[in-house]
Amino acid sequence: MNEPEAIRGMLRARTLAVIGVSENPGKPSHYVTAYMQSHGFMVHPVNPALEMVLGVRSYPSLTELVASGVKPDVVNVFRLPNFIPAIVDEMIALGLTDLWVQQGIVHREASEKAEAAGIRVVMDRCIMVEHRLSGGR
Image 1: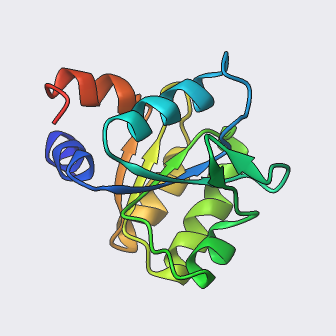
Image 2: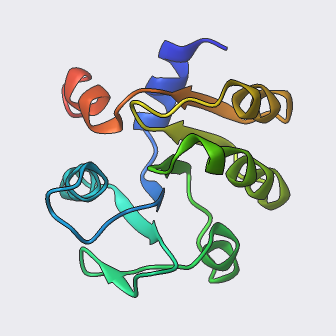
Image 3: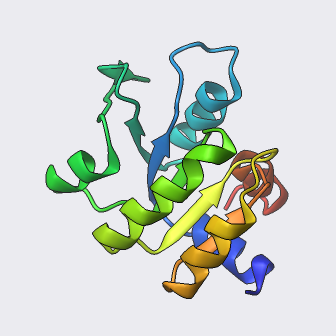
């Protein structure tokens, strides 16, 4: 995989499913999502414990988000590594093609499985930082 190309491609996306987003403004999952939203990205929170985040309905799963008629361009993940394989399986089942796993989160086997299924993967990088480095475009 050409990671710089994958990063550029995902930053051109406009619709993000954000798995593990928090309603706590002090948590990275919240302020990174708020940043992306403020820069024109349509964010769709995925967290079964929340009803709304950043003024947007939260979905309990990717499956329920897609069933609502939303097919996100990028699945952005703020979950512990042990959750990544199930997210990859769900993405494969739903035909989703771009996975961004936030900085500090690594699961090599899940990444390899995703790539083997045709999913572009960016792992262990912050989407907000990469967006800023790209000039916010």
